[in-house]
Amino acid sequence: MAKEVRVRFAPSPTGALHIGGVRTALYNYLFAKHNNGKFLLRIEDTDQTRYVEGAEQYIIDSLKWLGLTPDEGVGFGGDLGSYRQSERKEIYKQYVDELLASGNAYYAFDTAEELDAARAKAEENKETFIYNWSTRGNLKNSLSLTEDETKALIENGTPYVIRFKIDDSRTVLLDDMIRGKITIDAATLDDKVLFKSDGMPTYHLANIVDDHLMGISHVIRGEEWLPSMALHELLYDAFGWEAPRFAHLPLILKPEGKGKLSKRDGDKHGFPVFPMEWKTEEGIAKGYKQEGYFPDAVLNMLALLGWNSGTDQEIFTMEELIQLFSLEKVSKSGARFSPEKATWFNHQYLQQKSVEELLPSFEEVLKENGIEPNPVLDAKVVELLKERANFVKDIFEQGQFFYIAPSTYDEKAAKKAWKDDSKEILGKFVEVLNSSEFTSEILHDAMAEFVTAQEIGFGKIGMPLRLSLVGALQGPDVPVIMAILGKEETIARINKAIEVLG
Image (cartoon, one colour):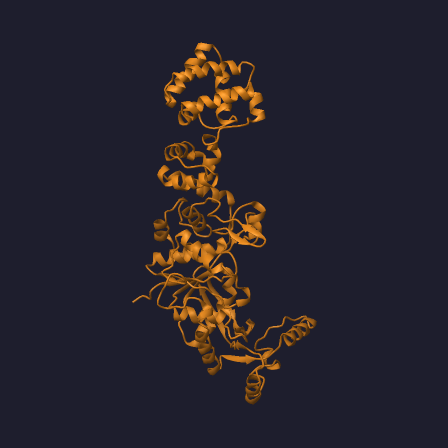
């Protein structure tokens, strides 16, 4: 029987979740769902010096907003917890003791100063210092000391770390699901620290032990972990465990195409690199949620940053992504992030949504701007303006004149639209409006008849009328604006313009 597919997203709570991390979570989620498996959230907080208050909750909230709900994990329950590494300390001690007993690990007592001195000496000889088979015999560890010396140092409370003993005679054969077969000479690897003097494991040990105990079948993570793959395979061997399959995802690159996308790029170009806004003492970093992106548009955009369905299709439902996703179709090379493409995806999703679906978000924008929602008016405005909008907030920006009558008039527009006879023409047109019904069709005909009767060009009425209603020469068709505003408001605005512009 095939092993159940179990994957994990394992971020460290050191700050906001980068969209590169979100894409890792998404690919894990899609792979799990495609294979009827389980998606876990594990918080890797073994490095307590880098822990940031609020970051863990931020990760959970981000996944919930995006709809990437874990089947197990911190904040989501499950039978194999705790899913927070800092609460699993005792477990790791047991496994590091096992490695010490089997001769696969050893105590190292070198101080930071002694290691710095060894590095400096290597540099003098134009060499790179590596703590491994070539140097460990000359350093202060349980391999170079006698058993009694080692015991005495431990009993005296001398600080130590526990290092993994790499077998330098090995050739490590790796098989990455994205990058294919890789061969590593173990003699080039260093004896990584597995356990620190503060009683906490390092990432390498905790990661392997947790993945084994949580039954992880596939490890899908960023390419920055590719150099650790050989060490992790050797650790699985040392424990006598079957290793999961590995897949290392390509980087998300800067819009310029070179280098990894960073928060600095977002600050520089004015786009978010985090799913939700992140507040620090330095200020607030933008988030996709607060900037008005739909979560499904963000996921669709991220899915295509490194994965390709093999077709020209660009808009996918989550069901389609789950059905089509495979690691074999993930690219080896980095994917360039495009802020314009992110906006394009949001535009596509906005167009697909009905007025009813958009109304709650639109009315939130109205409240933020101090405007009391009016469902009948709001629905008309959304329906009229959604086609040009990329974000729900754009609908308000383009249509705020429906809610706020102009108190001033665009100077350039006034020069162009308001002529000496505008006051007289608009005055006559108000008389027409007083006796007119207020549907856009009837108002359109009324304007056409008025132009003919007065023997004037359409611009003579259309431009000053638009200026009166909007405060600028923009917006949809004038009869449509008048119909939505209604008779009373339309006439009031025309009279106000006559009074102000004379």
